[in-house]
Image (cartoon, rainbow, N blue to C red; front, top):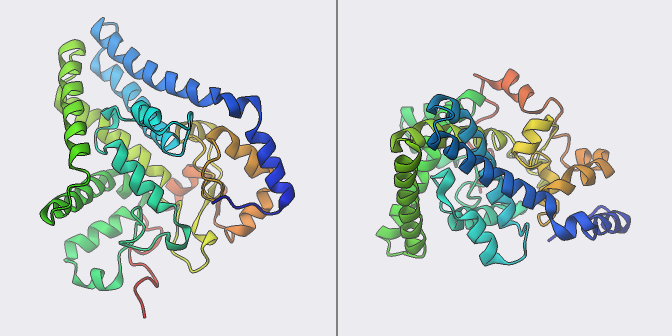
Length: 319
């Protein structure tokens, strides 16, 4: 469901969506070629002994992080409206930890704005219910507090998130819910084949790719979601506008304009900045000033080792 400020706003957005750029989706195709080309190209350079593992690592981290952003774009219907083709373009286990179909299904469920940030309802919530918090061990509470810092999210965010996914998957299987079993088998098979082929052809050890490439890539990807939502009563005030710099905007495919993305989820990434600039003051007002002017650098400076808010949801679950 798309949300517009008024008929003029809707017409302006529709004009952009009917442009040659939007109809051909060439910017998204270009990014897909760059990501796959860069990733495979780096492996080829390793195979040809043009570079070593230390040089290749940061390149592979960047391309793997960028690939996660491409997957996000694919699940929202870009560059094609053909679901099986988008799934094919995004099913490679380059980012390792999440099967594309599970990532897609949980993310699209997250787009229920009325339930944003609510634990156990919003799959991407960074909060817990008060009664769950009260039952937690001191160690678990400490970890959740640390994850609310910028550095903490990068360091312990990935293992906690992957651990939560494994826990929920095993719980589903325990209760005979095997909806995603085939997806996991396919993902595991593709991942094993990729890691073995990479090791034999390019000399990248399996452990090296998992620990030095995929893990840091997940850490960087989690920067974007560090403070893109907050737990407040007004629905749209839960969604941020982050004035990130050009490199981070490209890496995250403009998802920093997060309120615009939630209001217009089918809008391609390359139109988000222009649509935001059309009505910047209105969008900032709509999110009740949830506007991060200094981008991710500001968040790092202010919250590197300081919690940005509490892990406990302030009102969800209360009678």
